[in-house]
Image 1: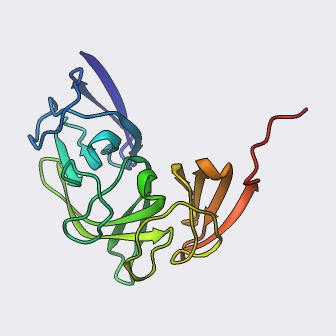
Image 2: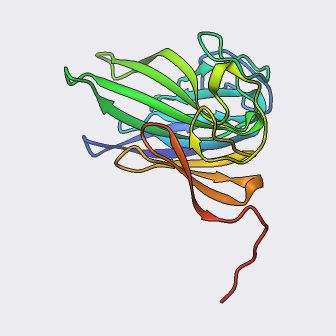
Length: 216
């Protein structure tokens, strides 16, 4: 057993919770003894909630500062469908973006490097914080954000810039977001770093589609 410490942003608090060693298997039990299968990426929000790309289970999970594990999206089966019963295919990493609407209501977006589908997916969430400090997430939408998204096309590896509906990736594995909502993606099999702006337009930031090497 090991103990993880999370900085609770805003309140500058440290929350401790214990995490048991996990074994590979899929489970919907909302306990810290939940099992993962080859988790590959995590991101932590401002309240200390840890979002996990559970690659081998094709799912996105969240761990609360109290150790409660919840499955947000995915049922353990690989797939590419969007919507209420969305599926992923070996999601490798994720990034959290928080924005506000005209009424100053918080809008939470989780951008996922959906490696097996060669896409960047977007999970939209609403959140409610309870009196005991737990936060409940409600998935309001799951959609393709970039990577041959148009007209519910079949996922396909490739390379192309432009709007998310026509841009293509080849096994994107890592993703990060800056303060303006721009996404930075490691387009692994294209040997590129790509940038996606807040409106979903994709461009090459660095690299070449030909394999290179470090030179001094």
